[in-house]
Length: 207
Image (tube, rainbow, N blue to C red; front, top):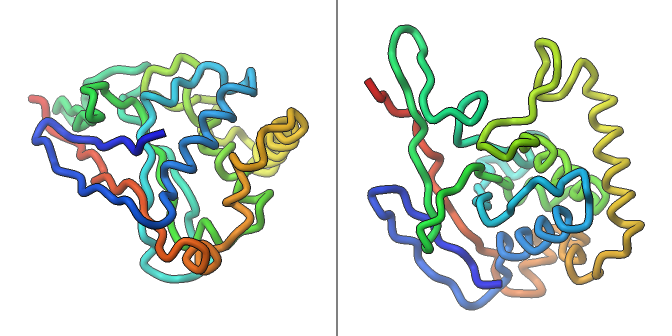
């Protein structure tokens, strides 16, 4: 699959790459397979999920590994009133003009330093945040802790369960084999690791 490029209305240029390991392209293939095989993720259209990598400032195993940024407000709304003003999220398009609804980010090298099973569970964790209506909003659970339910432990256990379910469906090994290697191993194999870099969409005043 060819690497996508993305642009805001200002049409930011994206430099192309040819040699090395394309991390975001491989991650897209993995997410495509997860969404295709698991009914629980069947509502996800990965063609409208932008994937990027971010460089972790500190080379440490501690900190954020991945994140999902919704590009709409609650209920898929483009506008939201906050403190008496209307706001919108800067819109993001791929090179075909398709508007993205979510931005999936992986923080390197931190993400690559975890064991295979933890990496897969992390990917599952972020995809599960995508709302069942696939309208640009997050999945909202009842209660104040709408993102992870009342129990982070139960949420994580559910993600581990879905990961095992996917593996039991025997996906092609080449789809996830790259997750067996840490960052230095990927560099040793391919010379360099690169991928799509996308500026975080800004919150803009709409009136």
